[in-house]
Image 1 (spheres, one colour):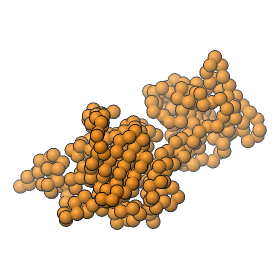
Image 2 (spheres, one colour):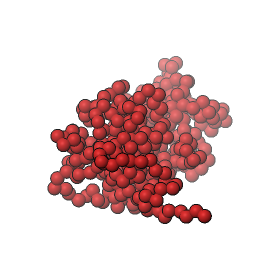
Image 3 (spheres, one colour):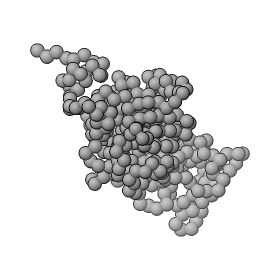
Image 4 (cartoon, one colour):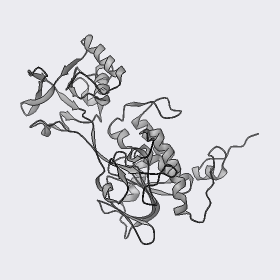
Length: 366
């Protein structure tokens, strides 16, 4: 993690006699939560940001730190890690305080209109506004249900790729039929520092949920004998000398085949869970928070929801949509924080006030 983030996290190590009083608490430190810091900062609103992960970046860092992202405006391509690092750099002027590795367990409205926010680690806040940017909520990978395999989780069994280099030169079996399975299969077949010794892709059927171009490339590599594809389901394991040596795959023909391996990667998708958010008295529709499209406010005034966790007519789960929502949510929150102040729209290109907030010099034009 970058040094400037460590500096901010260190601020949270000190104990507090009572709740931390603040104008805004952001729940979720993914890309949209980080950009929410920026939009609030432009309005001179300081935020505390909480995330259950031990580092900022959300799904971008947890699930695909090295995968390319192509739909960030004016950024032709960046990885999840690069996007996170750039957002952290962008919000540096606003001095947000991070509280990482903490799950928010309580959000309760107080008699004075503020919200009491508490985490499982006992950190407490009194805040005028709350911004929920929790992605799909608390997300966990769907597990491979085969007897005896759990003990290899984190050594030979992996549901995420955090360090691609650890799979270099290994005999890999990848299970799944979505984008993650196909993307990583292609990644480890291609020449490069992380090239595997061999790659076998297993899916329960011959149809895929992945991008057609990825499926076509996979079939092309199979035809060239650079990787293999098998239709079937993992039904058992073989062990030798305390290690996972092979899996047993039962095909549609009823035949069970033994597939040797060094590492097993399973990509069955995520199981989203709202967790404690479901108990905060907010309007919920299909595990998502209902918001308006003017301020992205939930059914509880003063609580806003941005990013994948919200729902409204026409909702699209895109990072760029979340950035737009964060901007309008910041303006929607301003009256709760500055009730006597009229907030005007200003532009970072021309506003001396915003230049001061950002810590940059106002350009002089001839």
